[in-house]
Length: 179
Image 1 (cartoon, rainbow, N blue to C red):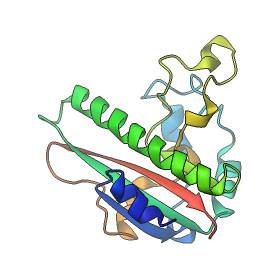
Image 2: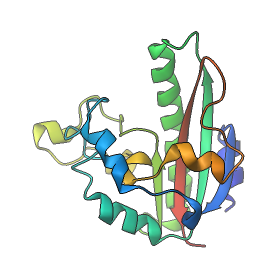
Image 3: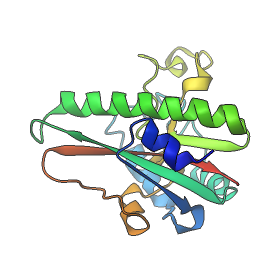
């Protein structure tokens, strides 16, 4: 399956195949998660610290040779349009879940890894907050950043920009695999 074509067909603004070795992986990014600006640190199974040690997550990424990264760009009313940002993230997450379903059906969950933007928002309240197992692990997506990927550097290895103009928000996702 051509994952670039799949993502574009599903609605991605842009997609590109990139060798994993070209991505900027930084364990230092974990500090941003620890600052808990999104409110999901230690409150979501797909976010730090519950997702695991950053060194192990980076090691996992390095077991794959290829990635297809895609982006979705959403227009906002203004730079304070938080509702527009949230709607964009929900739409991006829904598109990413559709891609993940195709990819996992073809490759299997043990042969590919799909990551999205931000921590999983599939459930209104993550089951970790009530000490239950994940209610829907087939639809739980971790973030590129939680795995140490410096998303702002993707534009250095592709034709995708991190910032796409005033009053826009851009979300990235990717699938990691071996051919």
